[in-house]
Image (cartoon, rainbow, N blue to C red; front, top):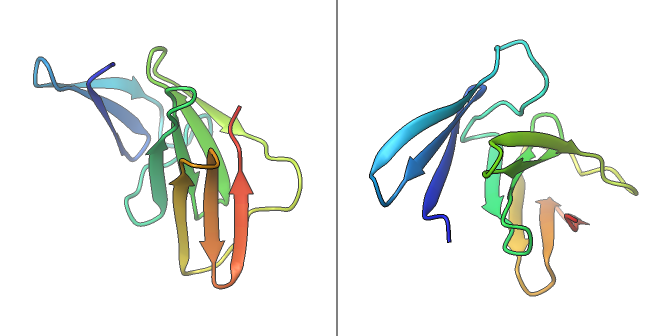
Length: 116
């Protein structure tokens, strides 16, 4: 178990080591680069995927999904196949542990994504 808290601010990624009680900036991507998601608490949700140990970030503003490998401090944009993620102003997301899927809800539309 990593005992790690991962946080985003703008284009930066930070790790908090709960054993040492120390924050560390692990990624400093330029603001205009599209290789990492923009970190914003009102437009993103970030969940731990227990199957892979990676983080899954949903960016509501761009309707995109990103995975984060904490061992490599690396972001990867996912390219879901099938129907597009819903778009709207009142979106919610959660990780359904029973089915192993990330669920995005907008009004009555429900969209699910299984990370592999």
